[in-house]
Length: 365
Image (cartoon, rainbow, N blue to C red; front, side, top):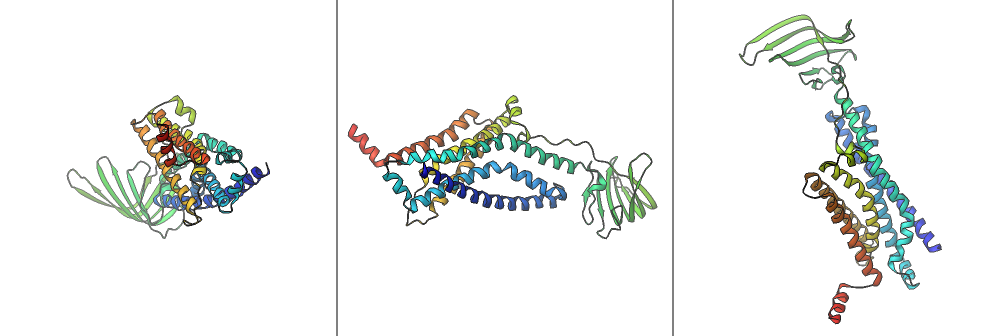
Protein backbone atom coordinates (compact mmCIF):
# COMPACT_ATOMS: atom_id res chain seq x y z
CA UNK A 1 0.00 0.00 0.00
CA UNK A 2 2.87 2.38 0.75
CA UNK A 3 4.40 1.64 -2.64
CA UNK A 4 1.04 2.24 -4.37
CA UNK A 5 0.60 5.51 -2.53
CA UNK A 6 4.07 6.73 -3.55
CA UNK A 7 3.36 5.83 -7.18
CA UNK A 8 0.10 7.78 -7.17
CA UNK A 9 1.78 10.81 -5.60
CA UNK A 10 4.50 10.79 -8.22
CA UNK A 11 1.92 10.36 -10.97
CA UNK A 12 0.03 13.33 -9.57
CA UNK A 13 3.11 15.57 -9.59
CA UNK A 14 4.10 14.50 -13.09
CA UNK A 15 0.54 14.87 -14.38
CA UNK A 16 0.18 18.37 -12.91
CA UNK A 17 3.46 19.59 -14.36
CA UNK A 18 2.71 18.12 -17.80
CA UNK A 19 -0.80 19.57 -17.78
CA UNK A 20 0.45 23.09 -17.01
CA UNK A 21 3.03 22.90 -19.81
CA UNK A 22 0.55 21.58 -22.39
CA UNK A 23 -2.12 24.13 -21.47
CA UNK A 24 0.44 26.93 -21.83
CA UNK A 25 1.54 25.65 -25.24
CA UNK A 26 -2.03 25.16 -26.48
CA UNK A 27 -3.14 28.58 -25.22
CA UNK A 28 -0.22 30.23 -27.02
CA UNK A 29 -1.04 28.42 -30.26
CA UNK A 30 -4.75 29.21 -29.96
CA UNK A 31 -3.99 32.86 -29.25
CA UNK A 32 -1.91 33.16 -32.43
CA UNK A 33 -4.60 31.35 -34.42
CA UNK A 34 -7.43 33.46 -32.99
CA UNK A 35 -5.57 36.69 -33.62
CA UNK A 36 -5.13 35.59 -37.23
CA UNK A 37 -8.87 34.98 -37.52
CA UNK A 38 -9.58 38.41 -36.04
CA UNK A 39 -7.21 39.99 -38.57
CA UNK A 40 -9.01 38.25 -41.45
CA UNK A 41 -12.39 39.46 -40.13
CA UNK A 42 -13.75 36.05 -39.12
CA UNK A 43 -14.29 36.98 -35.47
CA UNK A 44 -14.53 40.23 -33.57
CA UNK A 45 -11.27 41.55 -32.07
CA UNK A 46 -13.12 42.10 -28.80
CA UNK A 47 -14.04 38.39 -28.68
CA UNK A 48 -10.49 37.06 -29.11
CA UNK A 49 -10.09 35.99 -25.49
CA UNK A 50 -13.56 34.41 -25.38
CA UNK A 51 -12.98 32.40 -28.55
CA UNK A 52 -9.55 31.32 -27.32
CA UNK A 53 -10.99 30.27 -23.94
CA UNK A 54 -13.81 28.26 -25.53
CA UNK A 55 -11.36 26.62 -27.94
CA UNK A 56 -8.96 25.59 -25.19
CA UNK A 57 -11.88 24.34 -23.10
CA UNK A 58 -13.06 22.19 -25.99
CA UNK A 59 -9.56 20.74 -26.41
CA UNK A 60 -9.16 19.94 -22.71
CA UNK A 61 -10.15 16.29 -23.21
CA UNK A 62 -7.25 15.78 -25.62
CA UNK A 63 -4.89 17.74 -23.37
CA UNK A 64 -5.84 15.65 -20.33
CA UNK A 65 -5.39 12.41 -22.28
CA UNK A 66 -1.93 13.37 -23.47
CA UNK A 67 -0.94 14.66 -20.01
CA UNK A 68 -2.03 11.41 -18.38
CA UNK A 69 -0.20 9.31 -20.97
CA UNK A 70 3.03 11.30 -20.67
CA UNK A 71 2.82 11.29 -16.86
CA UNK A 72 2.54 7.50 -16.73
CA UNK A 73 5.34 6.96 -19.25
CA UNK A 74 7.61 9.45 -17.49
CA UNK A 75 6.98 7.94 -14.06
CA UNK A 76 7.61 4.39 -15.25
CA UNK A 77 10.76 5.47 -17.09
CA UNK A 78 12.08 7.07 -13.92
CA UNK A 79 11.32 3.92 -11.93
CA UNK A 80 13.15 1.76 -14.46
CA UNK A 81 16.11 4.13 -14.47
CA UNK A 82 16.38 4.18 -10.66
CA UNK A 83 15.97 0.38 -10.40
CA UNK A 84 12.66 0.68 -8.52
CA UNK A 85 11.00 -1.59 -11.04
CA UNK A 86 13.68 -4.21 -10.34
CA UNK A 87 12.69 -4.09 -6.67
CA UNK A 88 9.03 -4.37 -7.68
CA UNK A 89 9.74 -7.45 -9.82
CA UNK A 90 11.96 -9.06 -7.17
CA UNK A 91 9.11 -8.82 -4.65
CA UNK A 92 7.08 -11.25 -6.75
CA UNK A 93 4.99 -8.66 -8.59
CA UNK A 94 4.68 -8.59 -12.36
CA UNK A 95 4.27 -5.69 -14.74
CA UNK A 96 0.51 -6.17 -14.98
CA UNK A 97 0.16 -5.53 -11.25
CA UNK A 98 1.32 -1.94 -11.89
CA UNK A 99 -1.98 -1.35 -13.67
CA UNK A 100 -3.92 -1.33 -10.39
CA UNK A 101 -2.31 1.77 -8.78
CA UNK A 102 -2.27 3.52 -12.14
CA UNK A 103 -6.01 2.96 -12.63
CA UNK A 104 -6.71 4.13 -9.08
CA UNK A 105 -5.04 7.40 -9.94
CA UNK A 106 -6.40 7.73 -13.48
CA UNK A 107 -10.09 6.83 -13.21
CA UNK A 108 -11.23 10.31 -12.02
CA UNK A 109 -9.29 11.88 -14.90
CA UNK A 110 -10.88 9.47 -17.39
CA UNK A 111 -14.31 10.39 -15.98
CA UNK A 112 -13.52 14.09 -16.48
CA UNK A 113 -12.37 13.35 -20.05
CA UNK A 114 -15.67 11.61 -20.74
CA UNK A 115 -17.64 14.58 -19.36
CA UNK A 116 -15.58 17.05 -21.39
CA UNK A 117 -15.93 15.12 -24.65
CA UNK A 118 -19.65 14.36 -24.29
CA UNK A 119 -20.88 17.62 -22.73
CA UNK A 120 -18.34 20.46 -22.79
CA UNK A 121 -17.01 19.90 -26.34
CA UNK A 122 -20.36 20.56 -28.13
CA UNK A 123 -21.18 23.45 -25.81
CA UNK A 124 -17.87 25.23 -26.48
CA UNK A 125 -18.26 24.79 -30.24
CA UNK A 126 -21.78 26.17 -30.04
CA UNK A 127 -20.57 29.26 -28.20
CA UNK A 128 -17.82 29.88 -30.77
CA UNK A 129 -20.28 29.58 -33.66
CA UNK A 130 -22.66 31.95 -31.88
CA UNK A 131 -19.92 34.57 -31.52
CA UNK A 132 -18.95 34.23 -35.18
CA UNK A 133 -22.57 34.53 -36.30
CA UNK A 134 -23.07 37.68 -34.26
CA UNK A 135 -19.95 39.20 -35.77
CA UNK A 136 -20.95 38.26 -39.33
CA UNK A 137 -24.45 39.75 -38.98
CA UNK A 138 -23.47 43.07 -37.45
CA UNK A 139 -24.76 46.31 -39.01
CA UNK A 140 -23.00 48.16 -41.82
CA UNK A 141 -21.82 50.97 -39.57
CA UNK A 142 -20.23 48.45 -37.22
CA UNK A 143 -18.42 46.81 -40.13
CA UNK A 144 -16.65 49.98 -41.20
CA UNK A 145 -12.97 50.03 -40.22
CA UNK A 146 -10.58 52.87 -41.10
CA UNK A 147 -8.12 52.00 -43.84
CA UNK A 148 -9.85 48.73 -44.80
CA UNK A 149 -12.31 47.70 -47.49
CA UNK A 150 -15.38 46.32 -45.73
CA UNK A 151 -18.36 44.52 -47.29
CA UNK A 152 -21.92 45.20 -46.14
CA UNK A 153 -24.10 42.56 -44.47
CA UNK A 154 -26.04 41.80 -47.69
CA UNK A 155 -22.92 41.82 -49.87
CA UNK A 156 -24.15 44.64 -52.13
CA UNK A 157 -21.72 47.33 -50.93
CA UNK A 158 -18.02 47.77 -50.35
CA UNK A 159 -17.02 50.74 -48.16
CA UNK A 160 -13.64 52.34 -47.54
CA UNK A 161 -12.84 55.30 -45.30
CA UNK A 162 -9.57 57.06 -44.64
CA UNK A 163 -7.55 56.20 -41.54
CA UNK A 164 -7.60 59.85 -40.44
CA UNK A 165 -11.23 59.91 -39.40
CA UNK A 166 -12.72 62.71 -37.32
CA UNK A 167 -14.69 60.59 -34.81
CA UNK A 168 -16.70 57.37 -34.53
CA UNK A 169 -19.65 59.05 -36.29
CA UNK A 170 -17.70 61.06 -38.89
CA UNK A 171 -14.89 60.34 -41.38
CA UNK A 172 -12.95 61.80 -44.31
CA UNK A 173 -12.30 60.54 -47.85
CA UNK A 174 -15.04 57.94 -48.32
CA UNK A 175 -15.14 55.46 -51.21
CA UNK A 176 -18.28 53.37 -51.84
CA UNK A 177 -19.12 50.73 -54.48
CA UNK A 178 -22.72 49.51 -54.80
CA UNK A 179 -24.52 47.00 -57.01
CA UNK A 180 -28.31 47.22 -57.28
CA UNK A 181 -30.90 46.85 -60.02
CA UNK A 182 -28.29 45.50 -62.41
CA UNK A 183 -26.15 48.62 -62.21
CA UNK A 184 -22.92 49.61 -60.52
CA UNK A 185 -22.50 52.82 -58.53
CA UNK A 186 -19.12 54.20 -57.50
CA UNK A 187 -19.44 57.03 -54.97
CA UNK A 188 -16.72 59.14 -53.40
CA UNK A 189 -16.88 62.11 -51.05
CA UNK A 190 -14.60 64.24 -48.93
CA UNK A 191 -16.51 63.93 -45.65
CA UNK A 192 -19.35 61.88 -44.18
CA UNK A 193 -21.20 61.51 -40.92
CA UNK A 194 -23.98 59.34 -39.47
CA UNK A 195 -27.34 60.79 -38.46
CA UNK A 196 -30.44 59.27 -36.87
CA UNK A 197 -33.63 59.27 -38.98
CA UNK A 198 -37.15 59.82 -37.66
CA UNK A 199 -38.06 56.13 -38.09
CA UNK A 200 -35.12 55.04 -35.91
CA UNK A 201 -32.85 53.98 -38.78
CA UNK A 202 -29.39 55.42 -39.38
CA UNK A 203 -28.25 57.19 -42.54
CA UNK A 204 -24.81 58.05 -43.82
CA UNK A 205 -24.68 61.67 -45.02
CA UNK A 206 -21.97 62.18 -47.66
CA UNK A 207 -20.91 65.71 -48.59
CA UNK A 208 -18.90 67.26 -51.45
CA UNK A 209 -18.57 64.22 -53.66
CA UNK A 210 -19.56 62.55 -56.92
CA UNK A 211 -21.22 59.35 -58.08
CA UNK A 212 -20.46 57.36 -61.22
CA UNK A 213 -23.30 55.15 -62.47
CA UNK A 214 -22.47 52.37 -64.94
CA UNK A 215 -24.80 50.06 -66.86
CA UNK A 216 -22.88 46.82 -67.59
CA UNK A 217 -25.38 45.81 -70.31
CA UNK A 218 -24.99 48.91 -72.47
CA UNK A 219 -21.73 50.31 -71.12
CA UNK A 220 -23.26 53.74 -70.58
CA UNK A 221 -21.97 55.85 -67.70
CA UNK A 222 -23.43 58.80 -65.85
CA UNK A 223 -21.47 61.14 -63.60
CA UNK A 224 -23.32 63.07 -60.91
CA UNK A 225 -21.83 65.59 -58.52
CA UNK A 226 -23.54 66.34 -55.22
CA UNK A 227 -23.21 68.55 -52.20
CA UNK A 228 -25.20 66.27 -49.86
CA UNK A 229 -26.08 62.61 -50.46
CA UNK A 230 -27.89 60.41 -47.93
CA UNK A 231 -27.38 56.67 -47.85
CA UNK A 232 -29.45 54.29 -45.73
CA UNK A 233 -27.36 51.92 -43.63
CA UNK A 234 -28.54 48.34 -43.27
CA UNK A 235 -28.97 46.98 -39.77
CA UNK A 236 -27.81 43.52 -38.76
CA UNK A 237 -30.26 40.67 -39.25
CA UNK A 238 -31.33 37.97 -36.86
CA UNK A 239 -28.56 35.79 -35.50
CA UNK A 240 -28.73 32.34 -37.12
CA UNK A 241 -25.52 30.47 -36.45
CA UNK A 242 -24.58 27.71 -38.82
CA UNK A 243 -25.24 24.45 -37.00
CA UNK A 244 -22.66 21.68 -37.43
CA UNK A 245 -22.35 18.23 -35.91
CA UNK A 246 -19.69 19.51 -33.52
CA UNK A 247 -22.13 21.95 -31.92
CA UNK A 248 -24.94 19.40 -31.48
CA UNK A 249 -25.37 17.73 -28.12
CA UNK A 250 -24.66 14.02 -27.80
CA UNK A 251 -28.36 13.24 -27.36
CA UNK A 252 -29.18 15.11 -30.58
CA UNK A 253 -26.53 13.13 -32.41
CA UNK A 254 -28.08 9.87 -31.23
CA UNK A 255 -31.63 11.01 -32.09
CA UNK A 256 -30.54 11.97 -35.63
CA UNK A 257 -28.25 9.08 -36.62
CA UNK A 258 -26.91 10.40 -39.90
CA UNK A 259 -23.45 9.43 -41.09
CA UNK A 260 -21.91 12.73 -40.00
CA UNK A 261 -23.65 12.64 -36.61
CA UNK A 262 -22.59 9.05 -35.97
CA UNK A 263 -19.00 9.93 -36.85
CA UNK A 264 -19.05 12.81 -34.36
CA UNK A 265 -20.65 10.62 -31.67
CA UNK A 266 -18.00 7.96 -32.24
CA UNK A 267 -15.25 10.53 -31.89
CA UNK A 268 -16.63 11.78 -28.57
CA UNK A 269 -17.16 8.30 -27.16
CA UNK A 270 -13.68 7.27 -28.31
CA UNK A 271 -11.82 9.90 -26.30
CA UNK A 272 -12.23 8.25 -22.86
CA UNK A 273 -11.62 4.85 -24.47
CA UNK A 274 -8.40 6.21 -25.96
CA UNK A 275 -7.30 7.46 -22.54
CA UNK A 276 -7.86 3.97 -21.05
CA UNK A 277 -6.07 2.21 -23.92
CA UNK A 278 -3.09 4.53 -23.65
CA UNK A 279 -2.71 3.68 -19.97
CA UNK A 280 -2.26 0.02 -20.79
CA UNK A 281 -0.05 0.86 -23.74
CA UNK A 282 2.17 2.99 -21.49
CA UNK A 283 3.14 -0.14 -19.53
CA UNK A 284 4.07 -1.89 -22.77
CA UNK A 285 6.15 0.77 -24.52
CA UNK A 286 8.06 2.07 -21.48
CA UNK A 287 11.48 0.46 -21.71
CA UNK A 288 14.61 2.27 -20.55
CA UNK A 289 17.67 1.60 -22.67
CA UNK A 290 20.83 3.35 -21.36
CA UNK A 291 22.25 3.43 -24.89
CA UNK A 292 19.14 5.10 -26.34
CA UNK A 293 18.98 7.96 -23.81
CA UNK A 294 16.52 8.89 -21.13
CA UNK A 295 13.95 10.50 -23.47
CA UNK A 296 13.50 7.54 -25.81
CA UNK A 297 10.34 6.34 -24.04
CA UNK A 298 8.77 9.83 -24.21
CA UNK A 299 9.53 10.08 -27.92
CA UNK A 300 7.92 6.70 -28.53
CA UNK A 301 4.93 7.78 -26.42
CA UNK A 302 4.44 11.00 -28.39
CA UNK A 303 4.73 9.14 -31.69
CA UNK A 304 2.19 6.57 -30.47
CA UNK A 305 -0.22 9.31 -29.40
CA UNK A 306 0.03 11.11 -32.75
CA UNK A 307 -0.51 7.91 -34.74
CA UNK A 308 -3.47 6.88 -32.57
CA UNK A 309 -5.25 10.23 -32.87
CA UNK A 310 -4.60 10.39 -36.61
CA UNK A 311 -6.20 6.97 -36.97
CA UNK A 312 -9.18 8.25 -34.99
CA UNK A 313 -9.50 11.25 -37.31
CA UNK A 314 -9.21 9.10 -40.43
CA UNK A 315 -11.80 6.67 -39.07
CA UNK A 316 -14.15 9.55 -38.25
CA UNK A 317 -13.91 10.87 -41.82
CA UNK A 318 -14.59 7.38 -43.19
CA UNK A 319 -17.69 6.99 -41.02
CA UNK A 320 -18.90 10.45 -42.07
CA UNK A 321 -18.46 9.56 -45.75
CA UNK A 322 -20.18 6.17 -45.36
CA UNK A 323 -17.09 4.10 -46.12
CA UNK A 324 -17.11 2.52 -42.65
CA UNK A 325 -19.78 1.76 -40.06
CA UNK A 326 -19.62 3.13 -36.53
CA UNK A 327 -19.28 -0.37 -35.03
CA UNK A 328 -16.37 -1.19 -37.33
CA UNK A 329 -14.74 2.13 -36.43
CA UNK A 330 -15.01 1.54 -32.67
CA UNK A 331 -13.95 -2.12 -32.79
CA UNK A 332 -11.26 -1.63 -35.41
CA UNK A 333 -9.44 1.31 -33.84
CA UNK A 334 -10.17 1.27 -30.11
CA UNK A 335 -10.81 -2.46 -29.82
CA UNK A 336 -7.81 -3.25 -31.99
CA UNK A 337 -5.47 -1.07 -29.94
CA UNK A 338 -6.84 -2.52 -26.72
CA UNK A 339 -6.12 -6.04 -28.00
CA UNK A 340 -2.60 -5.03 -29.03
CA UNK A 341 -1.97 -3.38 -25.66
CA UNK A 342 -3.27 -6.36 -23.67
CA UNK A 343 -1.26 -8.78 -25.80
CA UNK A 344 1.90 -6.73 -25.36
CA UNK A 345 1.30 -6.40 -21.61
CA UNK A 346 0.86 -10.17 -21.37
CA UNK A 347 4.14 -10.77 -23.16
CA UNK A 348 6.02 -8.40 -20.88
CA UNK A 349 4.27 -9.62 -17.74
CA UNK A 350 5.15 -13.25 -18.52
CA UNK A 351 8.54 -12.15 -19.90
CA UNK A 352 7.91 -13.93 -23.14
CA UNK A 353 9.50 -13.19 -26.48
CA UNK A 354 8.20 -13.87 -29.95
CA UNK A 355 11.04 -16.34 -30.49
CA UNK A 356 10.01 -18.24 -27.38
CA UNK A 357 6.43 -18.43 -28.59
CA UNK A 358 7.46 -19.90 -31.92
CA UNK A 359 9.79 -22.37 -30.19
CA UNK A 360 7.01 -23.52 -27.85
CA UNK A 361 4.65 -23.95 -30.77
CA UNK A 362 7.25 -26.03 -32.56
CA UNK A 363 7.81 -28.24 -29.51
CA UNK A 364 4.06 -28.74 -29.08
CA UNK A 365 3.79 -29.74 -32.72
